[in-house]
Length: 122
Image 1 (tube, rainbow, N blue to C red):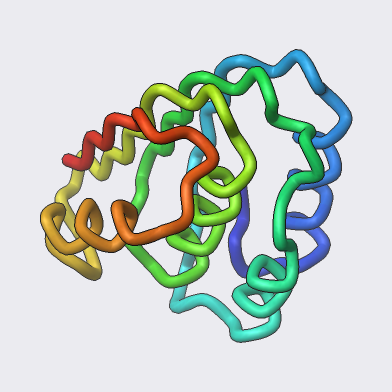
Image 2 (image 1 turned 90 degrees about the vertical axis):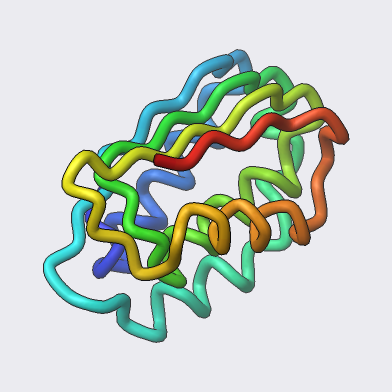
């Protein structure tokens, strides 16, 4: 997922909304530079995924860096998935903008549709 492009991000959101039986979601994060503000604003304007992820149980993000735009995407998922069990965010190069602890602490502060989400960051 190229988080720099509103067109790309909105297409991914559309695809997620189009699969109401989606149970597992894997996102490969791609970012050549810091997020552009319009993409962050677009994600903030999405209050929820309108019940589209009501069966989503697991989200896995590869090459996650903890950028604001990635965190906004996770905020949207957390607010929309009532049976979400686990979010795992991995960056094998360990190039994080925030520490793993800071990322987990921030995610725990987001509004959650599911009270029992397990966070894994590494």
